[in-house]
Length: 137
Image (tube, rainbow, N blue to C red; front, side, top):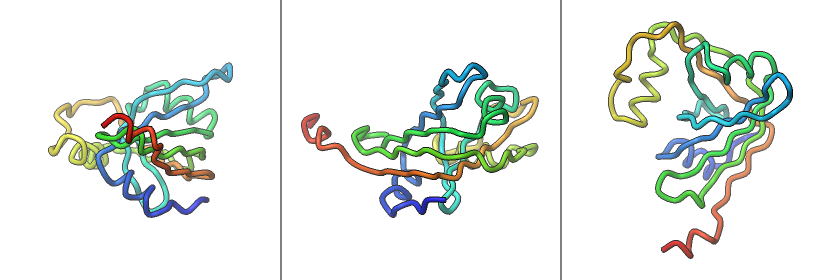
């Protein structure tokens, strides 16, 4: 497992958006926007248990994730890793933790067939800020 840099941790803990890539049965990539949380050096994402991304991660645990800062998409974290755990979230405590970060309140929808948290262990994690961000201002 890769240790996340302090800059990577700060990005993950702040206002950011992720894009999770999983592999379809035929090997084609599938990318979904996701909310992210950090647990030590592991990265968490959540989804409905019946989603394609969960099915893909159950079949093939290899994933990639890009994370960009909400107000500066030129600051980014690129991750390749493995889903090492699928956590059930029956009481929606994890979903509410994500929602508090992104919406400032518990998630409004309370009925789900089942929720799952994917725990991603990075094998590669590269944080950087492209100099192009300076051109946007």
